[in-house]
Length: 95
Picture: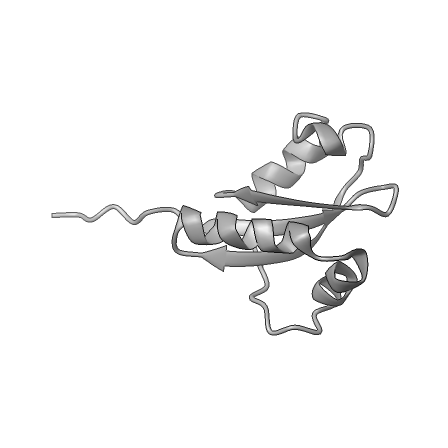
């Protein structure tokens, strides 16, 4: 019997070409960044491409990843800059 592993869930931050941050949720970070760059991602990132992936955190559940996405969105710009610099103890993504 084979068990199907549920996908990983990610909260991520991209830096847009206008130096703003966009935070989102996905199960496939590389695909999602490609979508943003192709102007097929979030409305916010359209016209702000190219985007640069600057921070990723992995979670085992969608609800945990989406909760973290919400938390990151509530951070001030200064707090987001600290987060993406890696000054916190966050989990980084490596494809």
